[in-house]
Length: 313
Length: 221
Image 1 (spheres, rainbow over the protein chains, first blue to last red):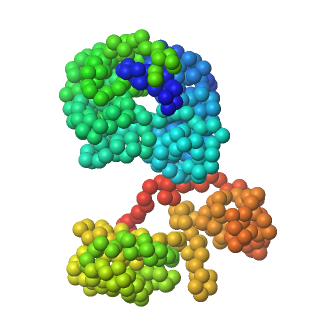
Image 2 (tube, each protein chain N blue to C red):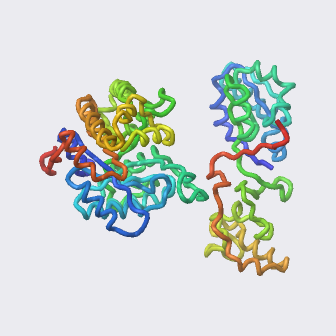
Image 3 (cartoon, chains in turn brown, cyan):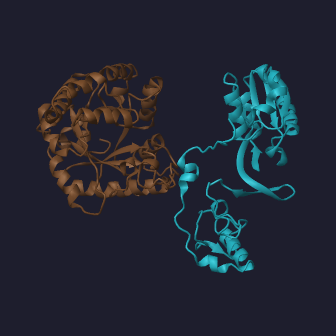
């Protein structure tokens, strides 16, 4: 085992994994995280805790991870390279590991222009692929990137993100391969709506054998309304929601659109479960954590398996 | 002005040695002042490359030329044919000139012969020092004409920090503490009261942090 995390054990035992995410609050009140965690608990193998997503200042991801962990859920630390240089990143990796965080997602981070401090200086001392390699070096070789020996190596299952729907398509799979080569153990994809494009992407991924080197968790986000779908298509870079997808929701009366969105999300998960090379789903029910149980249960993925340390070799 | 320094010769050679017809192309303004990238330096570098080619028995035709500035279209007029006839160009311009040529000649590989090092001045003959980082929001009016953004290793805006020692910076015995210079200058101008004003958090969106910058003159089309 690379990290011994619950997520790693579940996937190693061949179960279809489930992750979700929890955004920390815009303040110092821990109850916000604890309440969200209650809704996530029992439904996932690990829960992502976002790192100042969209550059909006929030409680730190490491603190959020600890609150999630205290609530009895395995945390998955999201770490962006926008705000910290290599010194701070290494230090936080050591701290997070010391506190028992075992899953990590390495990201670039949205530009600060989109947050509440657009005048901030960004860091980007290293990029997300370099962060993956940095963590792998620390974990597997027990040394700092500078070469000095670590007094205790950090233990993380190393994750990355990919967007199969961004332009240009030609570099989508090569870019994923770069991340796998750098050391990614798992990937969580951008929200999938266009299954045709995703199937083509997966064919190309399998041709390269990447699914055998890196566990692929397919990202899904239930739409609350047709309007949300249109908004995401327009405002979120790299989101591709086919018109036919939105139409199915738009055809419902307003009060039934949310239920339709959930029904379609469950439908998608069923389809993803049957796809070769998909190791699990990452359910991003954005500020809709109360629906996680319905979605994941509806997809036939509950209860979550319990895999003891000893049973995996 | 923009200051550059020639890359190590081996690095230059390795970039271009597989080409058959190479144009070594000087830029005779900023980087000529620091004797690194002008048309004269292009000639010298071309000679060194020819010698190396002979030594390594590599078949490569090397032509040298140059223009006043590689960052504006009009200067290229008399060398259009020369560039068009080259398989690749080794540009002795700063990074701006290299990119301008790469944009202008989309099918021709353009290699940099220089590392663009900084925006600086010439305090004495043969010496070049960094003076500006183009942060986009000049503070020199408040700092006695000494720039803490480019000359303080920490870019501290309310300095000096604890690493200032006898007027020098902790990073090197050869580096002056920018804030020592600010204070001395404010004192001399009788403006030391300015020092007691706290500089607010800087707007870095006007810096590189905010993305690539550009502006357009309204009266020009």
